[in-house]
Length: 112
Image 1 (cartoon, rainbow, N blue to C red):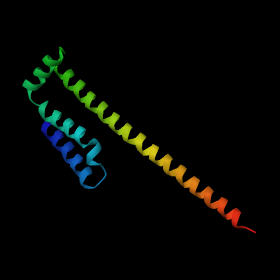
Image 2 (image 1 turned 60 degrees about the vertical axis):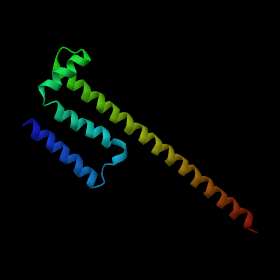
Image 3 (image 1 turned 90 degrees about the vertical axis):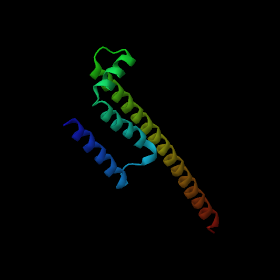
Image 4 (image 1 turned 90 degrees about the horizontal axis):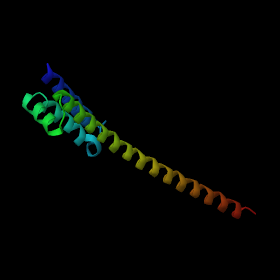
C-alpha cells in the first residue's frame, strides 16, 4: 500500500513536469527528495537510523520532521522565485510607463 502511494505521487510529479506545468530548475530537486524520502521511509532500518541520528525518540516523527523541512525548503525556493518575478514585473511596468510618458511628451512638443 505504501509503495503504491509513493509510486503514484512520483508518476504525478513526472506528469506535471512532462506537461510543462512544473519547472524542473526550481522545485524539481525538492520534489525528488520528497519521493526518495518516501521510498526510504518504507525501510524500518532507515526510519530508526534517522530517528537516532536526529535524537528523536519516536522514529515516525523523524520522517515527518524531515518531510516538513523539505517542504519548508520548497516553499522558500518558490517564494524567492515569486519575489524575483514580481520584481521583474515591476521593472517592466516602470519601463513601459516611462516609455509611454516619453512618447506623450514628444507628441506634445510636435504639436503646433
